[in-house]
Amino acid sequence: QVQLVESGGGLVQPGGSLRLSCVASGFTFESYSMRWYRQAPGKERELVATITAIDGATTYAPSVKGRFTISRDNRENTVYLRMNSLKPEDTAVYYCNVLRTKNYWGQGTQVTVSS
Image (cartoon, rainbow, N blue to C red; front, top):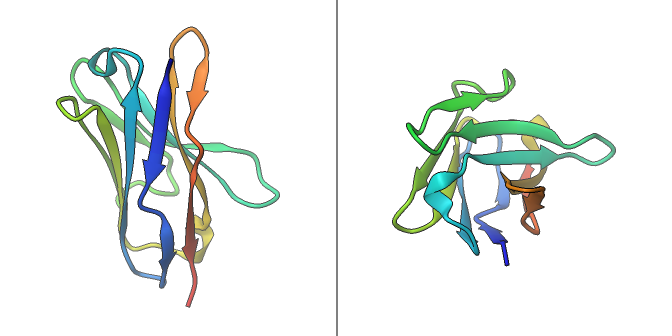
């Protein structure tokens, strides 16, 4: 079955950096676009970044463009989210996602940006 396991979250000061990882299994990873979402307390889940399967094209939410970078390693079945210049408003649970016959989600990893 499809499994997505995120890691790399934590507490970081404003202006700091983190790299999230998501290891995927149970499907042909290289054939699917992968996404990172986040959900802050009291807010709806929002799409942060997407990377396509075929050419690795990337798209970002306006709020993170220029600060976050999504990438993938098809040999390791892993998608990454490098987050630089973190702000308190980036605080959220970050989720890895793949859409096949339905949406699949990981368990999430908490990112807290605070001094």
